[in-house]
Image 1 (cartoon, rainbow, N blue to C red):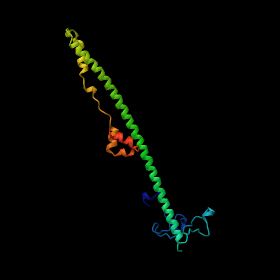
Image 2 (cartoon, rainbow, N blue to C red; image 1 turned 135 degrees about the vertical axis):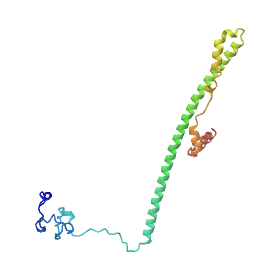
Image 3 (cartoon, rainbow, N blue to C red; image 1 turned 90 degrees about the vertical axis):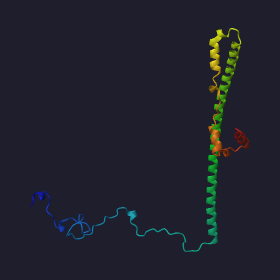
Image 4 (tube, rainbow, N blue to C red; image 1 turned 180 degrees about the horizontal axis):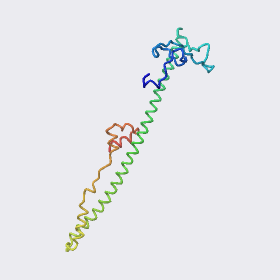
Length: 196
């Protein structure tokens, strides 16, 4: 024996190997005879049935009566019609929710615009008062004595960029451009919005 084969067991003939180890296919072990392996027994008694239960489709080979065709047609029609009604109701509900969201967003835009306009009107009122004071000081005989006040009134009253009004119209543009004005059901409200 060579040094590499000292640790391996000598080969046993196929007759000495237990049945469980020998495979049915004799190509794996040369010289081995095929041996049938015992199949395990079923332990569960319900799985052992003498007769198999078979599901039979109802009267496949018999001709249907015309009443059955009418009944099946009516059932199919009713199912499709109910599906249509459910889809229509769901779409109506979704559009109603979208209408509420657009109206809320439009109200928020109007509140922001109103607050901005009130601020601009207040600033313009102050500006008008300062311009009146500026003109009054300029018409005085000793206008040079009021130079500090003239400079202040002039610099504050002539700032025009802070008093420009730009509307918040994101919701309105979305209603017009995407065709969502159709969502608003009340015609009077819809007409008044179109005027904006």
